[in-house]
Length: 289
Image 1: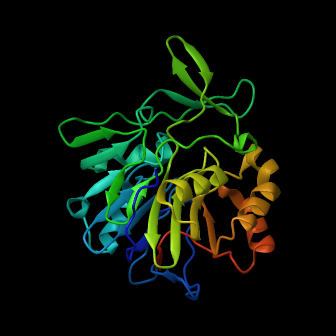
Image 2: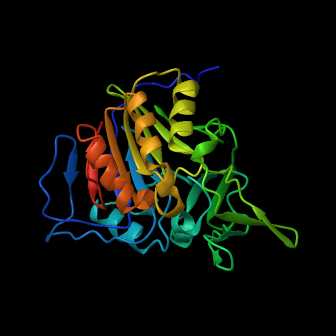
């Protein structure tokens, strides 16, 4: 049954992304905050702040927490102002700033297992998330969708309807063995606005099309105004760029803001093939819905 999700006004600010670009004119929806009077910092990873009328939600923390904390300060906030933190999934470039975070955390039960990136035979990178500290982190594990605030919820674990979206380069530790990591913890965050749904994805390991479709299903809202976040179209993901774009077009999404792991080629192709929908976005970009 669809979760009743109220329509709310919200402000979304990108706190962490791989890139930053200043002196770009504001667009119709994107305001660029970083500049000489307050330079935002960039680092590999993702973090975003969702502000509704009565709640501040931190999505991910970036890889070190340094950029997240600095950029949050430029907005006039500290971690004490955050009501709830939600992790899109348990990779270190999204959870590495855990040490600088405190308070209530929403995560999937798989978020803190031992994990590796293995892009090719013989190459392996440890991307395991830091472990929460029970003295300052109150972690709640949820595989199902959960409401974060009025008008805002997670998708919960995303069913893999479109198998072509999977990029099989990740492994996880099970006992003494490394096995394929399906990244079942990868989930999106959904805001219901008067413009339509806003779907935020850290990396889209579960597939951005799968994520958007489940967001529509659990909210009962058909119209999707905006998709923003990592689309994982980098590296081996480049093979699915064209199909992803075609499927996004079919969903009639009004605005697409690919960042982080969308990659240069992925962002370029979205800009070329969806010129009316594409919006250029980096650290310090803010959108009011």
